[in-house]
Length: 334
Image (cartoon, rainbow, N blue to C red; front, side, top):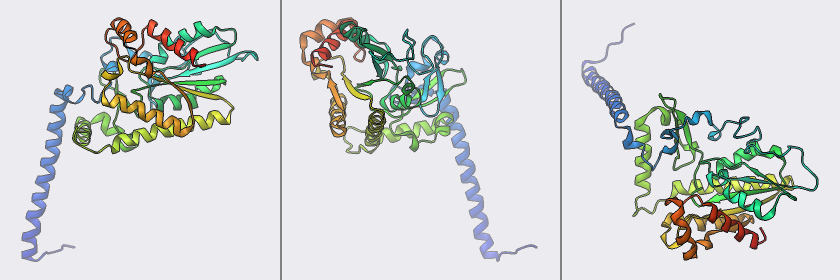
């Protein structure tokens, strides 16, 4: 059955449909061209602000060390010569606990994973009464660390969990994927990933650009908006609360150590100083025992003598600085 529109109505609707079709076609063509151009000039949207370039630009094939995992973004491959099936660094301890030994589990990011502070504590406390299990993972944040414990680390049944919170750990679960060269690509979003379309983030350069633009608009120096950052802070607090509740349920102690920026405190950025205040506020609110190593950064001679050995690395302590950290904790009855 044919439907005949009045001449006047048809003369209005037909041009409208034609115009809409041209608009949609032009929009689709613009998106295709935009994606092609951004693919060519990819560095414009994969700068340090958003992408964790240490994964993609690493000379080693990190896909042999890390695997994709929606819950973590990425995580270590377990059951090899680096990490055992419990998600801790391979060690010589038996999984069967000895009655006279306190099993310590350290969780954290690269500072924990590299083990310098843990080794310094081992030298001070010895191994007659303690085991030192290291579950640190390079580039992990607190949200990932807690989830990693709840899925894997808990199985070693520690007596005491020690979380090393780095000043730069206010992050959310990253978005990770393999690019066409099979390189691991990791993005650290500025909002929890529940607000991100992972498929679009992985496959659309325009989507990433819009996301980065949104961040820049929200975080201009003169902008009072901090809603996205507040969500991440809330997520970090939620993760710490969840960890405390789980450990308390199993009669396991929890201690947090705040790892500072390795630089004189006066040279910390405003964001770094604010991060220290935020994490101490959270720990006080949740009644979690903690030790803050930041006051050590006020010791000008300590920093000036040791910072030269770090090649300007403001995140990872040298052996000497790790020794001083351990002595500080020892003196504070850690």
